[in-house]
Each structure stands twice: as C-alpha cells, then as structure tokens.
Length: 226
Image 1 (cartoon, rainbow, N blue to C red):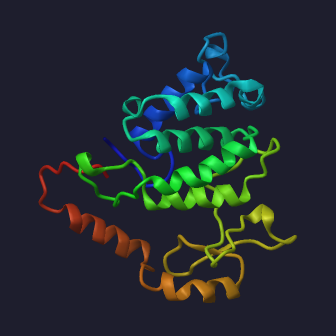
Image 2: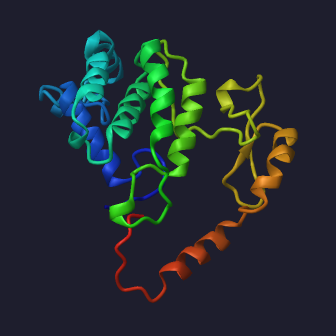
C-alpha cells in the first residue's frame, strides 16, 4: 500500500477510505471541486458549497451514527480511524460537526495506535504521527461554522501555538527554520521554545535526501507500508 507522505490523504489507504465514505454519503467528498463533465454523475464533484450543504442536511450526522454502530469487522483499520477520516473530509469543506460528535472525536483518535513511518502491513494501523498532530490541531482551531479548514496550511511549531498565517497579527508572517526549511515559526520566542526538541531532528534537505537514499540502497524488495 503506497504512501507519498505521512499526513492525511498522502497514502493509498486514506484515498480508499475517502472513496468508501463518499459512497456512503452519496456525494463525492474528497474531489468535491465542481467538475462540469462529471457534474451530472451522482458521484461527480458538486462544488464546495453544495457538498457542505449536503453534509449539513443530515448526511454527516448519519455517517457518524452509521460508523458508531456498525460491526468492527466492517472497517479495515478500525472504527476510530473511519470516524477521524469522516471528520477530516467534513472539515475540509467547512461542514458543521455537532458538539456531541466533536466530543466523540476528541476521545476516538486517542484510541488509535500510531504506526511508525515504515511499517509492516500486518502491524500498520494506518495512522502516523503527523496525522495525529494534524488532527489534534484541527480540533483546537476548526471554526465549525462554515469555514473550510486547511490541513496543510503551515503552522507555527512553537509549543501550544499552532497558528497559521491567517491567524497572526496584521503583516506578521510565519518564517521557516533556516536550516531544515520545513518547520515554521511565528516569532523568535516560539522558535527558541521549540529548539530543544527540534535540534534533535533538524537536518538540511540534502541531509534528509542522503539518509533516505541510504535507507533503500541495495534493497531489491521490501514489504513495508511507507
């Protein structure tokens, strides 16, 4: 099962989950952008507003209730991850998640075991550390009244900050770490507070590339989900 990254929808399983949830919803939830050639097809993209409206009209609540009551064997990676994926798809279009389901989600994701980046298929839970971090932050910052949430927006890594550019004071912008070019901060204070943790993993793009190439050097076959 292929993975291009460790965040939501960067792996084949996530996309399979999105497809199954879309079928249950009766409307395309991942590729929701309006696609004129496919718009007349029941599962063609209907656009952001139409998709959000459909979810808010009882479909989202129905999905949560269905997944909460279905037998565990219905889910390849478990009930909790299906609920999390459903919430992520809903947040992307700004659908309203009722308080009782938000409370349920705050407990559900904590039950999912985080799998290492390189996992054997039989021990892979489908849930990576970066996904857990994305979801935890979304539970704190999701406005839940019609505003789509961007799971891939850069956010400050300062402890307890998590701010995106649109949440900073006027004219303030996130700045990337000068060495790794990956981690962003909203201020020197946040960078300093996070440095004791980040210094252990801060590597230049060239160093990361070299390590990845060395990992796979000489391996003709590997049965890992990556």
